[in-house]
Length: 269
Length: 113
Image 1: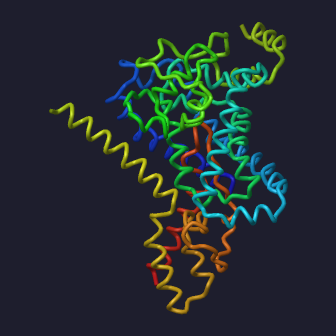
Image 2 (image 1 turned 90 degrees about the vertical axis):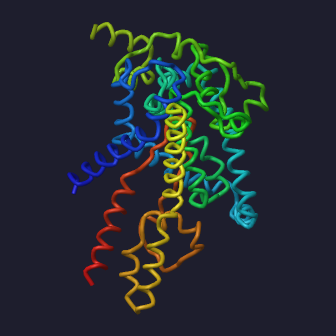
Image 3 (image 1 turned 180 degrees about the horizontal axis):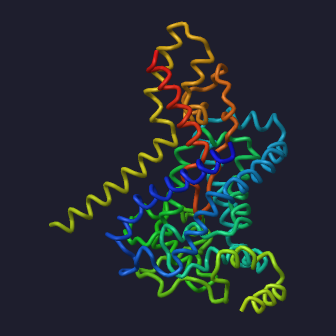
């Protein structure tokens, strides 16, 4: 039984990898943002480890944690109010949940860049020096719990059935990967509505406070004055701090005090 | 000429794959199974047999186009999709595979009748 489960996980990970490669690699080759960047660029294996880690270990743990705490959050608002909300037109409920989610994640994301404790975990994602669809998966599991938890909070509190907007959720999921891809294909005015790689690439600029904090759609950035859209690509991606270059190192470093991490590093060097 | 053809083809491929993925997640590929389901329920088969034909998508998204179907009792009805953040989202989960296997077994058993 366990063997079957492991086999299923391996199969689904391989299937997801193949599907995503088919979606994004042709785009990265035909419309490259950084010309000459290879598929197997430096640190490809590190990002591949994050991809495998997410599918094999962390995604179920993250989803379990969020569902576990989410269930208790649904009791915060009285049932009467929840049922009143549920009688509103679906389009109104959907818009409210999406706008509230985007607002929360915008604030949460800005805090991740401002507060050092949150940045410890979030910088793992920003440590990628080469952006492509695979680099999108470089994310510390505790960072995932924070961001996915925040973005789903309004739906849990309002008791909104996310099942009813599965198509929108699917689009947001795959678009989140797309905005990291090594693609430059200007969308024109549409990019203000659904976001684009050229905007998110600037978020990954070396400057920790570069802007474009909004989730997918940059409407919140427009509203709060953090929208950045120069006509060119940033010179370099990544972070200014020194950070581990291994999968285990990137997972462990944020959860350990600085001194202990330095001693571990010294020991292994 | 050749370059613009490649560009056009790449964009069409990209859009088609994304649209197919969204349709898959929304349960649009289940419509044929929905019709199978009706045929079986008309032929006085037991409810248990009807349930085995249910696919992952129609059950997860049961509120989406079936409103409230009280006859479905699949355990996976409790799965709640989540909004992913601006980073990566899991594209397929093992539940998709489990339910796909279940679907194929059900279809095989229908064929053998």
